[in-house]
Image (cartoon, rainbow, N blue to C red; front, side, top):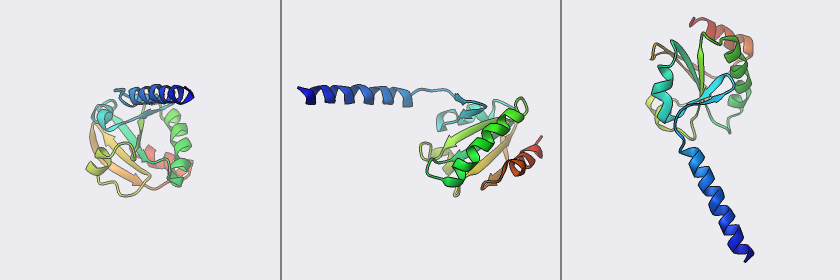
Length: 134
């Protein structure tokens, strides 16, 4: 009997997880928006200046850069739209833009790619990098 209950709990949990992963649209992460392959085109056209942080959970420099990007998204609020794309969960966009190292920041102006920043830096370094696009 306990095995049947466990199987039922697993089934419900799996359904809940599947439902979460199939949701469409963009999900806001504080000042940074979660971007997926399915929402990428919509997001890069959502603001005049967009920077997308391509990262993966296992990447140490990516984890170091994440809070810096979140802090800078607040500083540049209204000037730059920041997105974050997990390259492990979204393979099409990183392949399309030939991303071979992470973290990589893709920079878009009016929907067209104008630059990329590969690697991580401290907050002042990243602020200087982002400021030059304004």
